[in-house]
Amino acid sequence: MVGKDYLNKFHPKSKFIRQQVGYIALLLGALVAKISVRGKWHLPSKGGYIVSSNHFSIIDPPFFKYAIQKPINFLAASDQEVSEAFLWALHLYGFIPIDRKNIAPSTIKKAKRVLKNGEILGIFPEGSTTSAVLRKPKKGAVFLSTVEKVPIVPISIYGAETAWQDIFKGIRPRVYINIGKPFGPFETKGTKVEKQKKTEDIGDEMAVRIASLLPKSRRGEYKDDSRIADFQLENKIKPKETMLSPYYDPLL
Image (cartoon, rainbow, N blue to C red):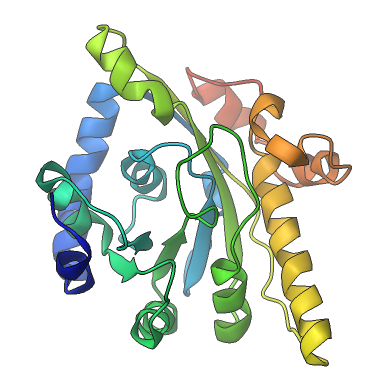
């Protein structure tokens, strides 16, 4: 196992190398699992943006990358231990270490640089994989979106949490990835209290947008939110893409 000291000193490989390694992820993903990706046309064609997703499994990132098919820089917790067997993943994802208990200015600086360079920043706003249902988000994604004036693309991933068990049973797991319509960026003007309230409201909308891409049983406290129906209409899958997907999950 490697710990905080190693992770905080980690420097990802170049964008080019990560892109090449990403092709391996696409191949392995296609061989190992039955993966349904819907709504890919929502992804911005250029410019920096944030992709924000639920986090039910420690192996969400490979499927995340499978869906995006572009180099991604992930904000990921460094205040934990990681098995040496998973160190290859850090090179694949452009890992940006973040101590969740004491966020260093250098972490924010690195994340901002990614967005300024027109690259993709991946964030799991729940911060951990301690639940099988959606939880309240932390503020990082909204903060970076408002500061760098970039949109947030909501994404849902589910099915990966049981992938290992399925594989060991000889079953090819099914993983569903739904990409929603980008929203933002927003401005947070006014007093400190007003800015805080606006940030919380945007974070809440982000969570509901992610919830709208999940089955009702996985939406947690957002399962009965009245905005879900409207967001589902915004994210409606094109008929052509629905027909082309052999693993179509009638979620929306």
